[in-house]
Length: 237
Image 1 (cartoon, rainbow, N blue to C red):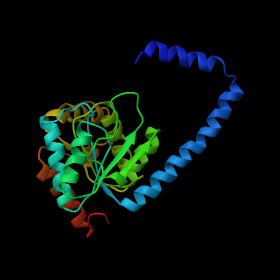
Image 2: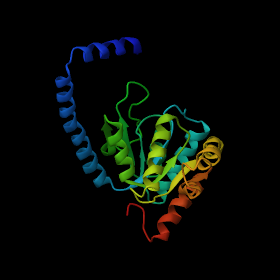
Image 3: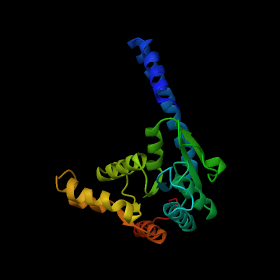
């Protein structure tokens, strides 16, 4: 992809539109956003709540965290949970692969991107949902999530993790389990939260209890099972 040419085309397109045309385009865009919400809600309502698994699209098969994501998803489905991923390659593919191997629901919420993202082959054919807008897709992840497992990833993973933590912290969504899998990877992030964010009083010390840091698939499954058994709830409640 030639980014310079793309930027030039965008600048040229914007230069040919006056403010009224831009406002009209924005108004029509609302209907596209609404249609994504409606389609997403209808499809996810039929599937039911699942555990969301996040991580990098760049993680290669047969690597440590790919294998861990696959094992986590497999054990979650064996405990009765469906698995939602972002639908693409890397950790997302591993999660869907593990879910299918475990005989559980394997859901992919795919996003249209100019690079990296295309549906992986381990999503159930009736559970592959495509999105254009990131914020609509994030609503689906959170609204239908029984748990949130973040494996090593980049900006997208951090964005989704921060959104989940913020919504739980502010009581905008139910306090479902948030689990960071891979202590080697997440230790720097956790230390920064403790030493900088808590120390500056930008979050409360008890906010550190909003998530767990683990290293094994068994730990992930136990945390989610313990949470729901405490409230006498079951998978796909």
